Length: 171
Image 1 (cartoon, one colour):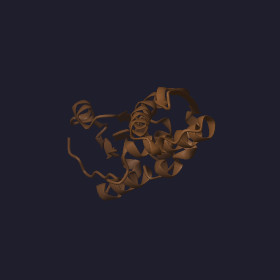
Image 2 (cartoon, rainbow, N blue to C red; image 1 turned 135 degrees about the vertical axis):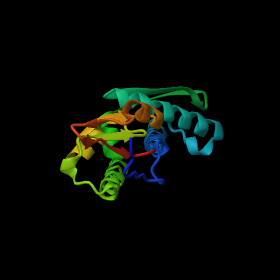
Image 3 (cartoon, helix red, strand yellow; image 1 turned 180 degrees about the horizontal axis):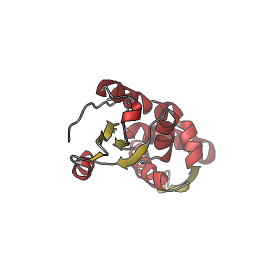
Image 4 (cartoon, one colour; image 1 turned 30 degrees about the vertical axis):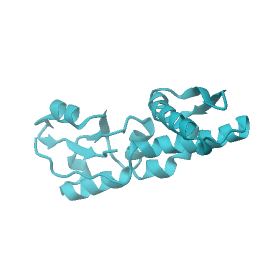
């Protein structure tokens, strides 16, 4: 396998998406439960950890509840969000995904019609990532969470003499 190009955004991480959830629920919990997680270190850390896990749950489900027991002032909190709402809240981050894809394509020197498919690597299991890539003409074949898995599975693969293009969107 010959890697013709790769690209990534070092400023865009999976943690940024968890931060969107954190800010959303921090505001909701302040309104609903009259608690400010920014004022309590333990609550802040607990909620940040819960949002990291919640992000993964939401990637596989269209909607999900967030339940944190004894978050602050001995209060149990409950939140809920649909994936569609989360995607709207984080759309500016999601739009950044196409930039490394376009750069990798340009750097490869290959025209789009010479590329059979695109392999996304990183925290790209969000269905909207694939939709955004498709909207700019990319045929996304697989999404890989881990670079090693991608390289093991794709090592040396060509289809009809056409190279498989690996777009590395590492987050």
